[in-house]
Image (cartoon, rainbow, N blue to C red; front, side, top):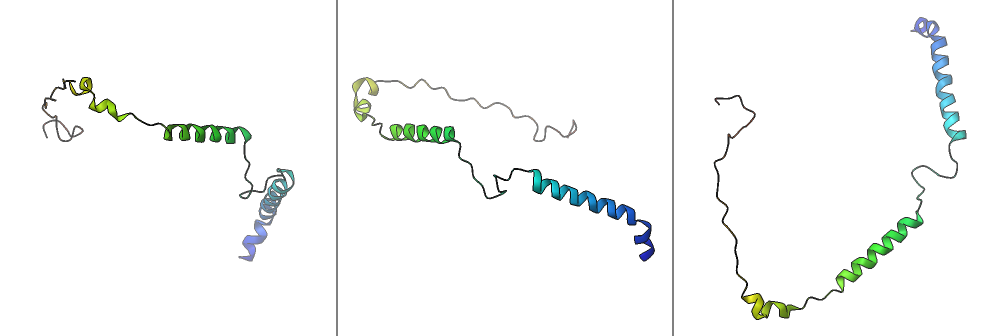
Length: 101
């Protein structure tokens, strides 16, 4: 084991220096204004959009429907012209199965 460490000592030192250089770079050269995982930035335009959305939702909530429409003679004379859906033959149960199964 000791022979293994002595043989690859230079590689271990180089890898250790690379790791230390990366940690030093990330510590010194990244933005110090923002703490990772703790900072929250609020975009003023986003809050304006949120306020507009809340205003629209409050307008929708204040809408009142006139229910007298449903008791009107013209509404009651409306005819239903719907058509029944004709069932059509169904294909194979497994379309990806080989033919003949």
